[in-house]
Image (cartoon, rainbow, N blue to C red; front, side, top):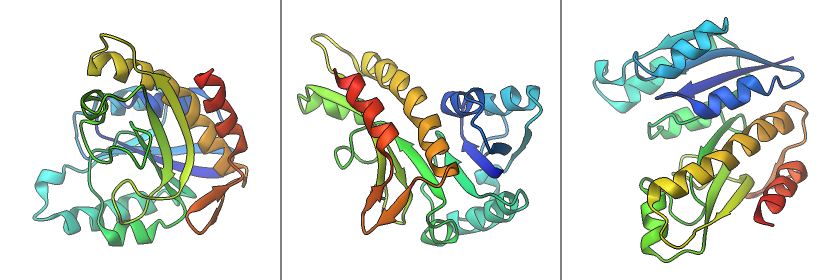
Length: 209
């Protein structure tokens, strides 16, 4: 049984998708947040999952917050830490501490559009497709080894919200599968490539059809 700790900053829809997937051999040990009023905390607590929050505004700097968050996370002895809409840039020390067991979902087809406002930037660039990327986290923002990607079309007249809604549906399919692949020992990092993520790659290919 693998212990999973999920970090969120809001309603945690991807967290909910992972919990609802009831992944075999995975135990959601805790859902944690940097915001005490994150709606996803109440959702998780209602389902008997341990929840806690650390307000990042209570700390003098990013390093102090990350150090305390590491202590909190480690109390749950995680095999995997999942960033499911955790809106914090992490320090190199945090990333190193959870190296090869920290994954994130980003709402673009990386390496395109790292950072914020991804769908607006895709529209401005005239992209014909948009999507999401699940990747291992490294100290360099949104640049870790890619586990899976899913793509959706950008349609005539789309707004950023239209794209976001379409991408979110893909996220909810790919993220639980990526967690399951990790739990089952299928993911192997070799250089900057993740081998063994065939199930998620196949899922994204179907979504492109």
